[in-house]
Image 1: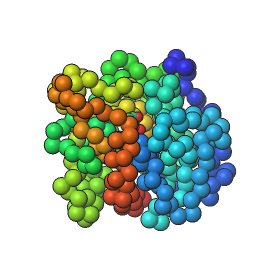
Image 2: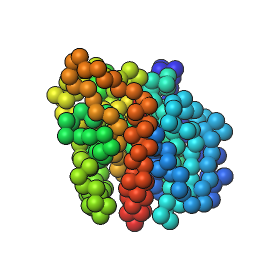
Image 3: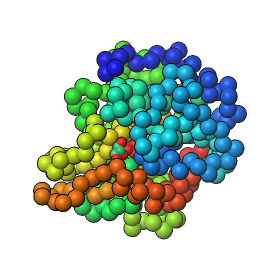
Image 4: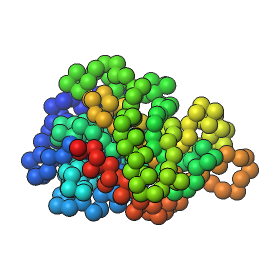
Length: 286
Ligand code: R1P
């Protein structure tokens, strides 16, 4: 329920301990897979998967393209903990619950996260299949007092008033630009600002024009709550959006955004993204 109080440290420890007792891996890197991006973690070695339904206190995934498993394994030899399926507030979850897996990651021992999403491209230089390294976000639900940190602050995780001006680690963004160069995909990679809306309806043309005026380059319905919670508990964050559709910025267009095109675009780019994530995980582990 939207007003429900966030789980406390002990309740989240129960979820983390369930996993720690069952996996041999001890990852310091967490990965959140966006819509259609679950295949990012399909090639892990020594893979161990735990369905969300089995993990105590865990929410369940209800959206197509989000499987619903915590997956541990080795990515380029680096132990990682992955959310193959994320939660969104439009599924009926309060924001703290959509971001709760980040706290579970923290208690498992994760200190850096890679957060991915499928997003609509607002910036007219962006094309379907492009990647946007996220350099900042605009937290629209936060403007109205809807934050995953609302409620009693748990000092075990972090301070009452966490800073957000360096939410997207500068050094990791620089590393990502180096990786992108090595991969030879600079032409289709940008750096920009992600804006979060509640969804689940896609944006109107007037809303998209407003978001463009505000300085947003890509729009989606996730990521920000996870990043706020990760920063609150002191994790380093690297995040990117895959542009899965171009936002319709003109009135009376015959086109309309749909989730099928989002999944298809994600699927088409999965190999590049697997490589990007793999190379970043290797660098983040150093
Ligand atoms: C819309 O097609 C869905 O795709 C994106 C939006 O946020 C929305 O949930 O999913 P992820 O942000 O989980 O990638």
